[in-house]
Length: 632
Image (cartoon, rainbow, N blue to C red; front, side, top):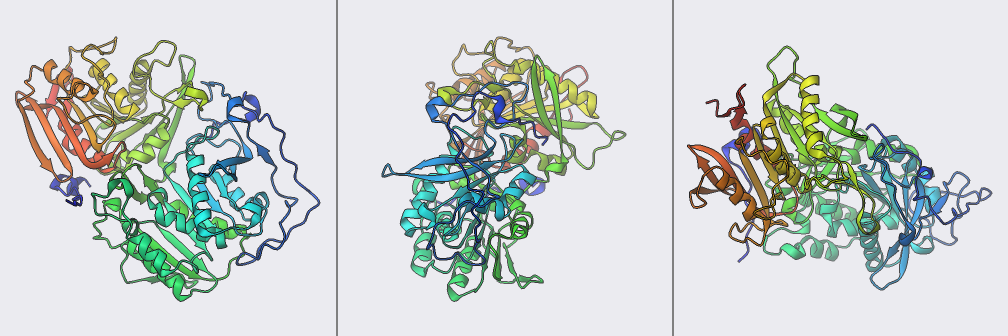
């Protein structure tokens, strides 16, 4: 039987609803072992002026083209564990990366990582037009400058012999190239806010790919790239359901992606493509017309799309004008006015994925401090209502998932947004680097197991709490700890070892107690701390509490037993997409377990609202450390 997820619309939700520290790659052992490819300074090129020219002759590299360097074979790639400069990339400059196709053939793409770019940077994906040298196009089109000014990586999809082939072949290539970069062992990036732009035939191939992979795109600009998308393709693609989640009635054509269609001539076919995207973004019929004639369509503010549950940011723009593909002002315009305005969070199933407005990162306070020989960093969000002379503010410390960072945690979780609305400070620290497995890049990962030889993250969190109390007018009785995945595991370790510092704990996507006897060495079980575990229906841990082969049952049973409650003495209820069980002690909810329908191993920003409204805001500690529930 088919089923469609209902939105979470309870009264509670309705009410509630960088400093770059990278360094040159020459200082690492990962310096390319193959000599950089030579470029020809003598070759002058003619860039495409509007639509892509016929590829009658291959374009040679221009004098201003950056050198294309070769990445070392994976077997030769190695990475130093630099704990004083943890956020750096290992390769800076322009590189060629191989793309292995399903038929074992090999294609290429180019990757440009500006000097100093952090490992948690966003990525701009560019599909070049026919008839251009990719390195020359990067420099001349302005995307190299955009990348440098915004400290982001640019990935360039390119055809063989500078001429795009048939759609089936090239969309398969873009699919393989996107996956190759997402899973690559050379560069690290924030794999959520992926912004795309494509020119001419390359843009057409990219648009076909995005239509069939819409949850990968935060925003897309198509330049002269819509004229060959016929109605049969649009109809079939729009009706296609997500392969792994066919039980849920949602299709590619119902997945919003902000899109800007720019064509030298807006034909009937271009209008049909615009109609496709307007439907996907659930746009109103009304339009706004800008000074240059651009028509802008906005998402219905009452849209029930699960992708835009609390921010109706879907948008479609249609512009009729000729574009000089190598005009750097055009690249700056489409990035600054459009692409950079949108963000995307989550992965896995469609119901783990959210389209939203990009955060204003200038509001995040970046702090570093050397602790035990490791340069630790954290990001802090202070609400506009904060005042040194006002009431002290609560504090939520959110711990990011494995391989992410404090910046990524702040952007992904939306705790900053809830903090602004509800009046509390948010702190998102970065874990320390741990050696990569199987030759992979070292990841920022929490030492939840308190393994010797790795960062002492329990001690770090204690220091972080004290630092926050020193710098901000914070309420010592209303500190809370949360996290997702590896950070969720660490947040539980914090609740088990530092309950004196926090009034409540809530985490999602992971458990810390893997067996009955698997408790942290510095366990402090003399202080009660309310704990809340949330999992998605398709999460990595089981939501069957009787399945003792999995960790979930151990964790819930440990806390229930710790507070002298019987497992059968729980209340249960369903609230929209949330199925809940709560165990109380003397009328106070001490343990809660929630399963989110449809969600995979991810995080939906609405969960921060649930954690705050229904859990954290209910608890505080008195000056003597006693637990206070609802002010009593």
